[in-house]
Image 1 (cartoon, rainbow, N blue to C red):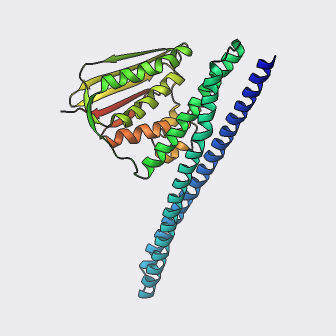
Image 2: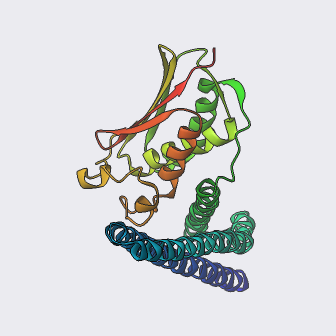
Image 3: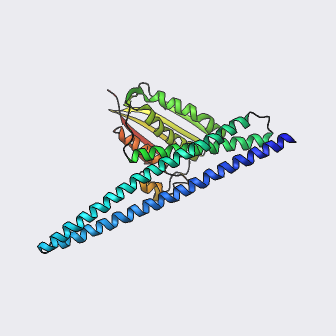
Length: 300
């Protein structure tokens, strides 16, 4: 009886932590959307002012002086907006940092609890909580990477390596998750598809694509890599419903994508994947709603 009581108290404390994290995540998302909306509105105001000033510039010398004055005011306003954007970036970094400590506490508590002699219900709840904590961890990491990409704070550490080895590692790491959802994941590779790239950054990009495929596929997920001319082609596809037609045009549109619910996703992962691939001189596109095709230059 005492064990059940202790278990119930642990579960209650962990659920409270998870609820708090989810609340903070929602508040952060709302704050970010509000900031983005304000920035877009300011941009439209500036464009309108510039258009009006161009008309005024056609007038007399005094009109030109007025144009010059207003132009300086617009520049000052733009500088203020840029400063606000930088402050917002710092705020995001602080929020992400504050997320990490309680999240690690939840994951550690769940890992300890998983070792306890629990009944089937207890084990199921523990695994569910761990999956939730892992999802939150992925979100925190994606937000941090997105923030760094937005402000040019990521540099590539390029190395020559075989993409097939990297994808094999990622697929093996995703197999347990796929099997727990009764899904099959497979990899088809050519030998010796070498690229000159930052393995850590591309691992993040491909990891996001594979994670999405495992999440939204019905039964099967297929990854392939091959050489085509001077390019390496990586395909990640699943047999799920795919992204709706109206969403496909927004899938890689940066900030706009983050404010849209993409099949109940947060949008950060795909945005990050696109930017990281672009940094390597590559390209990523969505084909048919549920297939992502990544093209990268082959290392000569």
